[in-house]
Length: 438
Image (cartoon, rainbow, N blue to C red; front, side, top):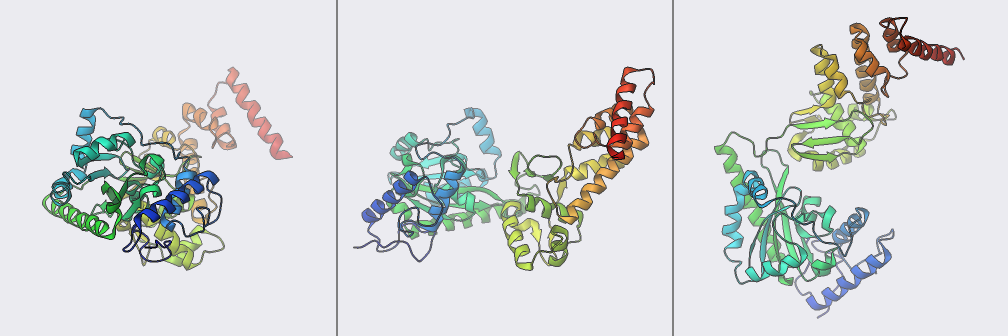
């Protein structure tokens, strides 16, 4: 029977009804070798004829290459002591659904050659259970509890790619980016917090080629549905959220903007940081047109705004963003709010400790530029009003205060004219006068 290239059908299914598994394995292995040899040049046909592998696999290979993943590498070794891993697992939301997974998947996995894995939201394996001989074989590729199987570390693999894409997926043999996993196939799907929509982990079945058929993907999806129902019941019984996290946006200074969720730090694109910052500034919400004006002086079209919001939901959580108007549906604190709060309380030193630089210094969004100017003006006004010599010295030697003539003059006014420092500060002010005079 001929195995046709994957030109249609469900892109998340690896082995389709009627596929010749041996022929499919040869074709995928050849495509992987060709891709690795070419080091992923641009274009959609770098894996061969353009149809040799599914688009979801080719895209994952491209991401793996861009992240510097080696096809000859393997998962990172366990970096937690046994006691630390046990404590982490016990406190993790996925521990709540483990009994459901064991009942639906693990109990029947003995002597089947199958493994059932539960991961956290980052791709770390929390539990690996199932056939004992398969567990022994899996040691060779470090598919063990505590190991990092994120796509960023191992490349294309079912649990890691499912988490990266927030979608169920199957990986067949040489579709794995790492050669050490080419003898295995797997099916996985992410699990979400019912209250927030955020990913809390993934469920995976790993084994031979029969793991990559549509029926197994349906089984995984059904198990995830049962698991999320169990989490929903848990939340009804307990007032405590699954994960105690207050989302925090960090946008001050020259570093990459970041969303902090508990111990997790999620790098953001500048555009996503701009949107979150503007929505935090407007708790009442913003229409698509108003948001477009605040983001770009030339105004973005509605289609672009919708596309950006769709991408942002995958990062921020679909349950955390509302529409019509666009608005935040969860608490979002920020370093900007922290500086303002310190200034409101009269704690100037605390404000300066947080104020590491301008708000999104690379942004040209009109709304962000206004906010950047407003916050800097508030900090400067508080400095001049308080006249604290120590804080003025700190400000004038910082990247955002070293050109602040008013602050330098206030600093000079508090110095003893007989001190060496007075003459140094006076010279700096004279230099400013010469520069501005020309």
